[in-house]
Amino acid sequence: MGGCDGRHKERQYFTDVALALPKDTVILTAGCAKYRYNKLGLGEIGGIPRVLDAGQCNDSYSLVVIAQALAEAFGCSVNELPLSFDIAWYEQKAVIVLLALLSLGVKKIRLGPTLPAFLSPNVAATIVQAYDLMPTQEAEADVAAMMAGA
Figure (cartoon, helix red, strand yellow):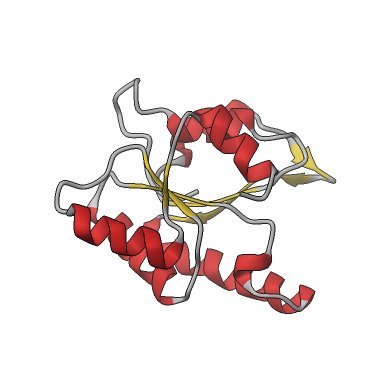
């Protein structure tokens, strides 16, 4: 997860996703999304915390390196891994994170909970068609889709 829930109570999508994820899943994060759920005590898997934090948005590259290393270890592409990419549009750095992922060919990224005003319908349609970009929905529905590999 990368991005930010923001300061407004209604913007808690990422916290809701973290709470809804099965206890045997790991959350890799960069950005400010984790400031709300880091304090929730989401547990460990084999003594390793479930939330692995790479830092701020500028550190998202570390998550890409992890994904690429996993893909190499399993002999597949990043898009074939059981990973889900959730990115928030709350500040300009998120745009750079998204563009970096798209330039690497990463597909099926969930984007939201709000979209930037500058994203025109034509640009959105092009990105959706080329990269299977999808908007975030309700956290429970997105988690169910993630666990189903969608």
